[in-house]
Image (cartoon, rainbow, N blue to C red):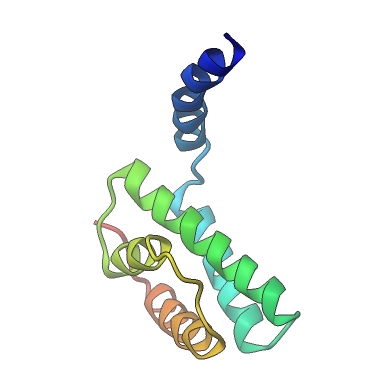
Amino acid sequence: MLLGAGLQLAPAHATQAWKRAKPFPEASAAAKNAAQAVIHEAGSEECLRGKLSNAIVQLSNSCDVSGLSSSVCELASDIAGRELELDVAEMLTTSETLLQMLGDGASAR
């Protein structure tokens, strides 16, 4: 009986997660901070990978929930959908790309 109740609650938790998506300006600021941390090697590899990955997922969710479409939203969505984690070289490249896109005033349409 409890198992069935648990299964029924899962979709409600998923819905709640969407309601908690950060606004695009906040999510993009977090992505910038994470990208800068990666570039400046401000932490262990594992910590930086987690920080960047979480920021990218938040950015992707923000874009999805808000219905925004831009090159930075597409990048975030592509990376957030990967099954494998980024290696160090990919983290650096992604961070540089994010900073360039977000620093150039890349706005969502």
